[in-house]
Length: 341
Image 1 (cartoon, rainbow, N blue to C red):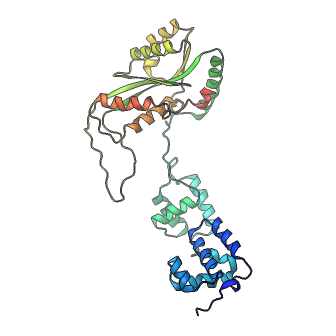
Image 2 (image 1 turned 135 degrees about the vertical axis):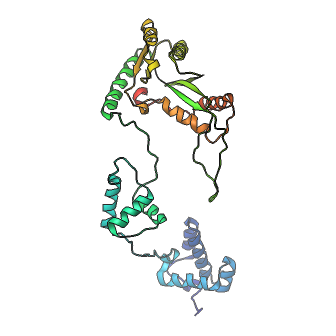
């Protein structure tokens, strides 16, 4: 049983030097061990010596060397095992993928869950998959777990597309004349912690302590191509809006600001303020129900992530963390392309 060729008779069609080159190039740890066993056998070592040097059972070494004689150098790697026949045929997988792309039936706009997909497969194909196997199947079909972005049901994609084209032309025109293009928005921040996902030990139940307070403050911010400017305010009013725009005008003498349709952005006082500064200030409105067109909305997302899962007992404590985040230019999103280029 244990009689195997050794020395130059073992693998006579290949030299020791070639085996050594293969060993150096090989990245797979198991394949390297097999090549090392073949090199030692080629040099005339016994099975016991090879097993002792590689710290492997004698029978394992014998199996490796026997497969070298049977499969030649292909024995470096394991044979690919066919495995069990899949429950769903290739044609069924193609149909299932089309069903998944269309979305769950009778629920327009809803995303699939692992449980719903498993139930869909059971009803349509009569095959029962466990939860983990449904997850692997979805990954194999090219799907990933994603969180949808919110969009108001009244928003109009055609109106948004036309706005982006027009805003791009307007921004380009004013930029060529030396004006600064910016976007402005306000945000409310609660002292109660924002909860977000994070890593924890499997089976544990992480807890974030909170004070359940209703205290809050607001932030007004504007994004230009170069920087993000912000102020902490206690109320969102036309007065705070005008005061902030004055600050922006000191830094940017000629300014085009894109704002949403909040009532305090369209008040008589704001219109009168703009008329007096018609040569240095232009206000443009985003389409209704279209916060995704405003880059400043992305800054609020980063800000809330920065203070998530934190116990903030006072307003200054929250403002400190937010100020640190806003002053980190690398963490802040860049201006949207349709307003930047």
